[in-house]
Structure formats: C-alpha cells, structure tokens
Amino acid sequence: MTTATRIEDLTLRITEEIHVKAPLELTFATLLEQLGPFNEVGADRPLPMKIEPWPGGRWYRDLGDGNGHLWGHVQAIKRPTLLEIYGPLIMSYPAISNLQYRLSEEAGGTVIQFHHQALGLILDEHRQGIPSGWRFTHARLKERAEAIRAGRTSAH
Amino acid sequence: MIAMATAAKIEDLTLSINEEIHVKAPLAVTFESLLEQLGASMEMLNGEAMPMKIEPWPGGRWYRDLGDGNGHLWGHVQAIKRPTLLEIYGPLMMSYAATSNVQYRLSEETGGTLITFHHMAIGLIPADRKEGFSKGWAYIAAHAKERAEKAR
Image 1 (cartoon, rainbow over the protein chains, first blue to last red):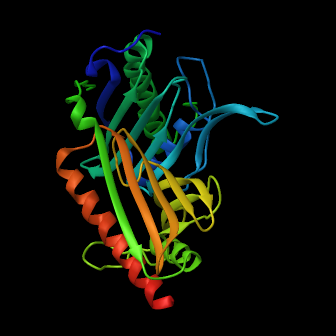
Image 2 (image 1 turned 135 degrees about the vertical axis):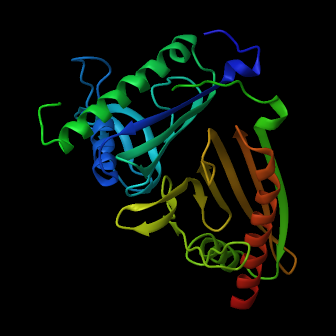
C-alpha cells in the first residue's frame, strides 16, 4: 500500500438508482436476502452473508466455529423504506463506509436510491472493483424480486 | 447509473468540538444524569422528546429504537469507567462516510463535578451540519447539568 497524496485518493462515492418491478415490501425483503444468504460476488460465486436486521445488528460472513468477517453494522433500518450500513465492508485497512438504500414506490414498482460513501486508505483495486460489485448485486436483487413477484422461485 | 465524485478539501473532512461543563452535583450523580440524558431523556433542540437507548457496557449500542426491529444506531460504547469516563464511537446521526469519537471525562472540582467533553469526527461532513452539532451537544450538556443539580 502506498501513502495517499491527494484527498481524492481517500474517498469513494458511488450512487445508483435501481428500478424494480415489484412492490416495496417484497423489494425490501429481497434486498435483505440478497445482502444476506443470497449474496454473490459473481455468476455462480455465492458468498452467503448474515445480516441481523435491527439497529446495531451485524452484517458478516460466518465461517463457523466463531470465525468470520464483519463487514458492518446496521446503522438505520426502517422497514420497508430504509437500510443503512456502517462499517469497514471488505476493506482490511483503515476505512469507514456508509451504505444507504432508500426505497420508495414508483409507477409499476419500486425505486431504490443507493449510495456507498467511503473514506480511508482505499486500495486502487477496490476503487476499480467495488462499483461493478454493486452493479452485480443490484442486478441480482432486481432479478430475484421480479421473479418472486411473477411467481417464479428459481432465481436463486 | 453509477456515478463517482471526488472529495472536498481536507479541512472539510474534520470536526472538533470541545466543551467544559461545571455541575453543582457529586460525580456519581452527574454520571448517572449524563447517561439518563443521552438515553431515555434525550430531546431534540426544540424540546421534543427523542428517547434513545444506551447499553452501558463496552460495545453496547447507543441507538434510537423505533420498535419492530427498526431504528437508528448512533454508536457503540467505546469506554465506560463509572463515574469518570464515557466514550462513544460510531456514525452518530451522520448518514455519510464519517466516524466520530465522543468523550465525556468527569472529575471532582470544588462544589461539584467538571465534565470535559469532546466530539471529534472525520468524514465527508457537509459544512452546513457542523454548527448544528455544537448546538446539539450544548443542549444535551445543559440538560444533563440541570438534571444532576435537581437530583442532588
């Protein structure tokens, strides 16, 4: 790791808007599942996580026998419109992130306003890779919510 | 759409607030009043009740409980040494990349207790929020003082 020389090197801001053709409650529940047991890092690359859906609850990878990785804590949860996470995420260096999912109804479904802000000694490989990681997660979330709404349950 | 933006200037990334509160009440009473004020008796600046919960042990949560598993986490207890130290670590009410250290150090002084307070934060803190923090902490301190002096 090299020392950051510019303020821009210390920050990361990602925003995304996801339009889901599914009701608010279903989309929120699917979001919790997608970040939890259905978490994936790529096609056919499951990385199941656990999320404790209450203020201060942990979002973590459970490796069993008390081993695992903490990605963050639930900073805010207001079903079915808000989920906020605070923590290190996957960054094994001094950094803090805020993730925010704000859900609202729109014609034909739900819109999710997402942001990820981070401050820290952020590695270049993470700066490059994290946006596509979120895009993948959100595409799967949308696909699953819409499949569940349509009565298909095979979108796992 | 995914968008990325650059950060602000380095001065915009930090916040530092210091306050000294002189309380005409014993140390233990003042400490308990402080916990009460940050917890069940928390209020907004307009006096409206905004009860919080504080789990008074290392790692305990300081949070707004909205029921049914909903709520807002403001931080975790970083240090607690009754009746001289309470330290909180966490996002507080900042819904952006930021982390804070809040520290209350209590010591005896002639006629009562001195609370030395600081709030330090680093993060992507909007400029218009900084003044609000000073007012908020001063309000909490004033009410903790009032509560302790009444209880004395």
